[in-house]
Amino acid sequence: MSDVDRLFDTRDEIDRAAQVFGAASRSAATGYDGKDEFGTATVRLTPEGHLQDVRISMDWRTRVGADGLAAAVQAAITTAGVRRLEEWGHGMDVSMSGPPPSLSPAPALYETMAGRLEDRVRSAKTPREVAAVEQALVEVMDELIRDVDELTEQVDTALTSSVRGESSHEKHAVAEMSLTGEVVALEYDERWLARAHPANIGRETLAAVDAARRALAGRSITDVIAQSRLQQLQVLLNDPDAVAQRLGL
Image (cartoon, rainbow, N blue to C red; front, side, top):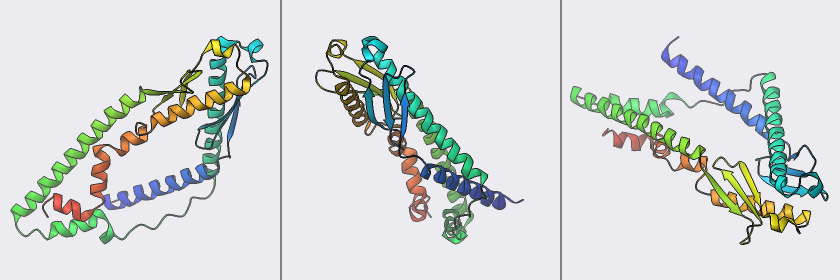
């Protein structure tokens, strides 16, 4: 099998995997519910995994008390998140058990980045011009490798970072969210909890999580990747004319 055949086989595998992934995502439920083991907190997540509703039982004080409420709500969120992942996994199994999806049409070689650059490289008339083009290609690939390493470090740092959101200036509820968008911790003002109605606790929890998600804007893992030099280079590589200019062709 030639390198070109392997390249097209890889393209086909990626295309089929993307279609299976998309089908599993489209089969997701409209929401996912979760409870803690004591039935103190009941939550609902959107298909995207965002916290949509929080309900606290009327007898939460006798079930878990003020010092155990945050852990109960967090456990309910985790349960709902696990159900979301399980359903997505089931959707993947269903998609993969059926016949392979039809391949998306591949562009003709002359329309691809490689094909269009190859035409430009062939237009080089002297050995010196060919050598200059090859050196420029090596420099672009070296830059790509450096950008991948830099982005890896940025993502590693982001994975250990978080943002916080407060429900109000009184800080009745405080939520901590990872840069992947997961609620990793909750805190409540126990003095406020002593007189708070369960419905108000649910509202304050949602407000704190919403504030954390707003604080996440521009700092999420997706944002880190979108703002990286690697993303900028990818945009460049999708423009054959810009690449040709960069390579001096």
